[in-house]
Image 1 (cartoon, rainbow, N blue to C red):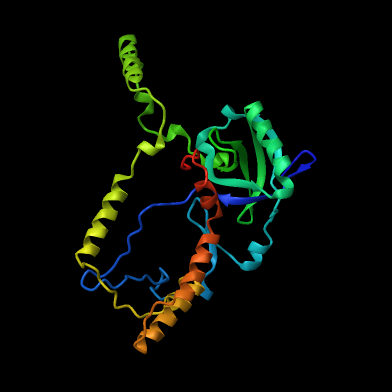
Image 2 (cartoon, rainbow, N blue to C red; image 1 turned 60 degrees about the vertical axis):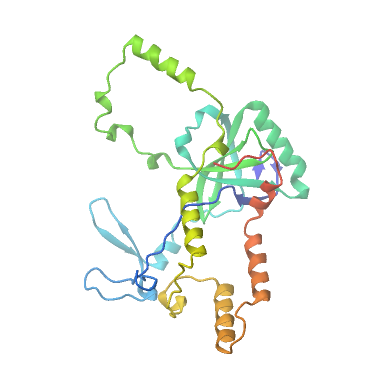
Length: 293
């Protein structure tokens, strides 16, 4: 990360994680997973992954196929540097532009410069507008300091043309001006319901209910063992190599009548999983840090 002539070596960690519930589609009678095949719309023939190309569809419905050479010739401004372009008032960034959030962590050599930038952002009540390469594509982002945290957060921004115009709403112009008495009453209601935002007080009751339901079914023995034996690699899906090896070992041991649980592979899998979430581990040490929204 660079601002002016100051360079700060940093590491980038995702600041959020998705806890959305994911349900698989299965055949009700035996729990067998439903798989989808890639087929061509023109004739219904299945298409091998190696024969699939990328295409761009224009606004008028025309399809233009792009080859690997076409894609390689496109501008690629990939860079590992986060470059500060300017410092702007925090309120000038419309929250609708915010996209993905990342924690920036300094290495030992950059700790002092990191602290300098953090305090400069706090004292000025500004955010730093930066350019950064994310997944090989340059994008805008802002650096800001959370009020309850010591970490600098980098938040990528949507491009202006990705924000829909409110004039697309059909009935917005039908909203009439309220009467003064109505506004006064509304203000009284707002005052009576005013308070501080405490995200911990909001609970995902649907997820909790699903977890309780699943646990109840497991306790009652309502568990279906899928009869599927198909290798996931043959289905065209990307699978984790270690997980695939683990299943192979367990299957071989089961065939010999041995215990299918490989503790060594499990330990390796656990280490790999822990390595993927350094930010979550770091955040959990802070008793004052709130859960990222």
